Image: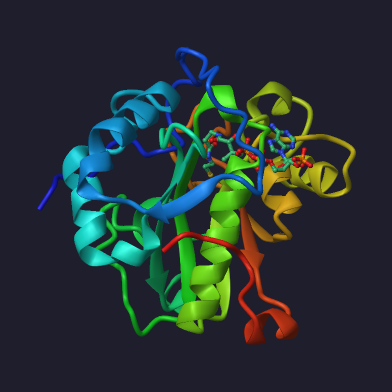
Length: 244
Ligand SMILES: CC(C)(COP(=O)(O)OP(=O)(O)OC[C@H]1O[C@@H](n2cnc3c(N)ncnc32)[C@H](O)[C@@H]1OP(=O)(O)O)[C@@H](O)C(=O)NCCC(=O)NCCS
């Protein structure tokens, strides 16, 4: 077993530079989403390290373990022409009532190892999402979320739950409580790089967790606990063109 993580994806230093990908203009409808394969791991490590601190990045052994534990939950978005990895998601299934609504990421995901995955659970839990910095704002994250929604429908799960680290909070923490900040983002009075993305995916905020990602400097550890549930019509007709 791996030792407990001292940091987490989403935690640590802000994004570091990477070479712009000038070969792709992804666009929500053209991004291909497929299951992660063991051969993707070097690229996923590269992606993870450009976003998180070395300490907070995913490790190869964790990514391999995720594929053993719940292969369908691990997905990558690839460029339509190059096949290059543009983004990734890590997911697991949990019986959500096992934890309080504001439980930390490390408890729900077993420090990112996903040994808490339970195929009998009712909830698809978003343990991580990351998109290359140079292809953000082009629909890659949305395409990955559509794929998560399709997975939820295929598996007959009830909801997607995640913690959206409020990565713009530190800037205003001397003036606003985390709740006030989240409230302003929900009302559209303020934008947050992660929570605004989750809200745009149709998530609603259930709670604010104060110790979600303890080592995440940008959010000071705070996250908005967010949830998405499918509409009754969606339950009868999965729609996306996810390539499986
Ligand atoms: C959050 C993240 C996954 C979004 O991915 P993305 O590919 O840029 O998202 P999309 O292009 O699909 O954006 C979809 C919508 O989200 C919203 N959105 C995305 N980024 C946003 C931002 N920085 N500020 C405000 N809204 C944003 C927009 O409404 C956008 O809709 P539009 O296309 O109509 O403008 C990406 O920024 C990322 O990898 N961040 C670093 C890692 C991270 O924080 N992960 C979350 C851990 S909890």
